[in-house]
Image (tube, rainbow, N blue to C red; front, side, top):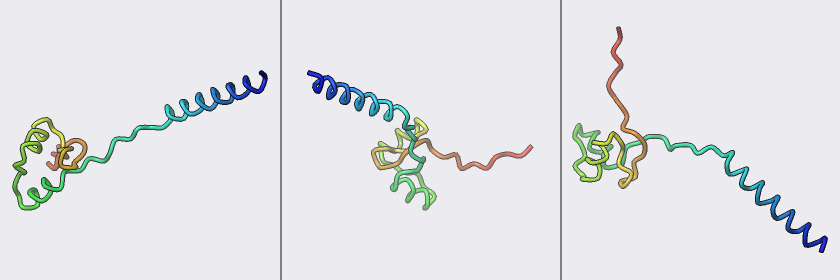
Length: 81
C-alpha cells in the first residue's frame, strides 16, 4: 500500500513539475517577414495580387497562408523635426 502511495505521489509531483515548466516558457512571436510571393513582387516595385495577400495587407498583416508572418513592416523613413 505504501509503494502505491509513493508511486502516485511521484507521478503527481512529475505532472505538477511539468505543468510549471510549461508555464515558465515564454511564447515568442515569430519575426515579421513577408511571404515569398509578396517579396518577389515588392522587389519588382509591384504589389502582390493574391486574394489572401490582399486581405492580409488590408488588416496590416503579412499573409500567413503564403508563409509570411507578423505585421507588415513600415518602410517609410522617420521624419526628423
